[in-house]
Image 1 (cartoon, protein in one colour):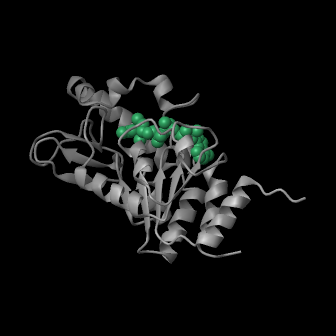
Image 2: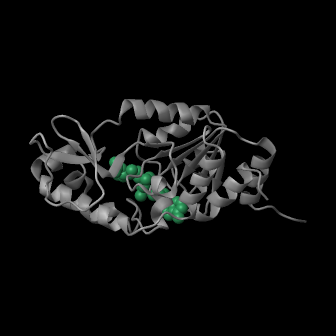
Image 3: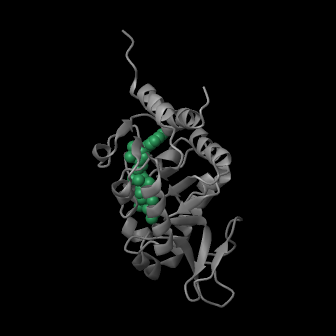
Length: 247
Ligand code: OAD
């Protein structure tokens, strides 16, 4: 008797149902194999740093230099990392299906755009953007900062364009994400611990098939139709090949 693995069953399901509209919610786990640290878990950033001391409006008011130095450190770390096979598979899917693929990411590392994804909703901001604290002008930058904290041309201080603890997500971004997740024939939930809302809540609006990809169980596992307990760099290329009808 041949027993199919769970991955093989999911691939067969995709081949049979041929989902057209695909939404993908990603978290830090998709970038873990690129060398970007995750937040939770044994090696996670929040093991060594307290979020409220670095990633909150209060922290920035107290010590903007410390906050900027932390983001500068993370930006330099990510700069040395390359997108992995998981990011590449999602970019490939969008190249083949540009109008029906949406990546909704909690990641601020910019690895999805570097891999070639374009239709991306960056729910938590981006490490390579700053925002004026007065005018809300958004500035993209790539080179290391010349002075910390950086200042806007208007004379006010710039802040990282990141959603901090206690802040709300951009409502237009959240609306687009909710729409994409609810309309999708297939929602993939990749590399997130599923504990930060409202991003984690997107699984509850899904009307199509939901597949979680994460080596560990999360609070979202029960809610998903399928759970593939494996690294995303292995699962995503195979799922994307199945979606695109490739052998
Ligand atoms: P977490 O660090 O909370 O979770 C990362 C998840 O990735 C864990 O569930 C791991 O099991 C999983 N994982 C690890 N390696 C993986 C791999 N190779 N393939 C697939 N999954 C893997 O990160 P997030 O859920 O993204 O907020 O955290 C959510 C938010 O909390 C972040 O956006 C950040 C943080 O505070 C802001 O910065 C605003």
